[in-house]
Amino acid sequence: MPLLQIRLTPGCFDNAQRDRFVAAVSAAAAAAESLADTPVARLRTVALVEQLAPGHFYLGGQSGDQLARGAFVLWQVSAGVLDGARKARFAAALQAAADAEGGDDPRTLITSCVIDEVPEGQWAQNGTIRRLPEAAALAGFTHLADIALP
Image (cartoon, rainbow, N blue to C red; front, side, top):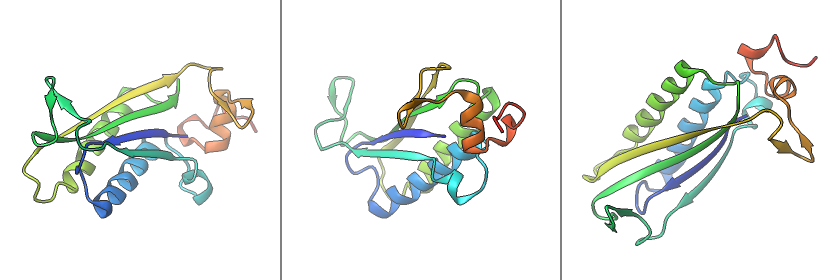
């Protein structure tokens, strides 16, 4: 059940580009987690998007607004859901999604993602601790069906 925190630098994308980018990144995270391809399961992909104000992005200690643009992602996922190949596919999909929305902006486009694997028993949701077997059942993780609670 992907929880994505996406920060975009000033003017990284226009509104339409941002919407397409977030949709593509959300789909890539859902695919990496092997979420069931159902409307209910897909609604479990949460993306919180923040656009930095001008003057709040720095590179090498200097304002980076005119130098580059960036999409920075923190992806929180339950430990045990992803393996190296899934992470690599997501990283490639993140870059492809950003490149697809590149437009005519000549600034260098930077993407970065920190994958935060939340240890078992450390994720609380709706007043309860969500353990991996329960999360696997709720999300319909197809690759974890054998551990999902009935």
